[in-house]
Image (cartoon, rainbow, N blue to C red):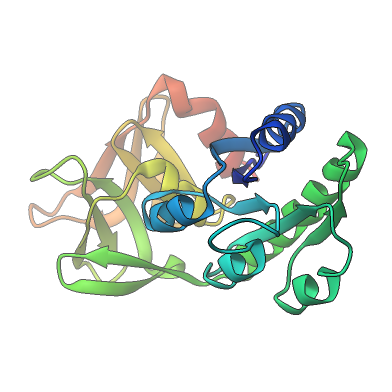
Length: 239
């Protein structure tokens, strides 16, 4: 899979922000989620935004980029600034890279490549994700998941079948968000409403996937394999 980093862009000067956005649009590994010239407004929006990377200026009114980055958890940061003197502080907070303006496309591409490498390594090392459920915040371990489906009660929620046969209800989470977090080789979307763990599959044919899990009626759980997702599914089960 060609991973894309979902990124936020921040520069209080509109010409600088416009130029940065133009550069980022030329980098195929980036998907721009939001471009902002207001650091305090962006800070208030962080919890509602799905992103992996912040590309930010440093000297800005209200709150500077360094303090803003310190408030992020498990997010990557690249600084683009006209000032050289903040580099040590930037790397002290584990910034991916520090670029001095004027920013060149080749230099930004190099920084994004470093961010992508760190992102993919982080994902490969992860064993679980933390999600909101109907029972509060829960650590969902990847090796405990059999499949994930749209909840019957609310399409914004997702129901997870765990390896012990129990179910967990995830609150207000999108399939795209889950797929970005789950190990790519181990999970696959099979239709608009379901994701399956490859190890949970007993057998499959052109249109159906049968799981090892046995339901109360003594029949194995069966999922529909949609044509839209068939090619990706076949690649993963043949690895």
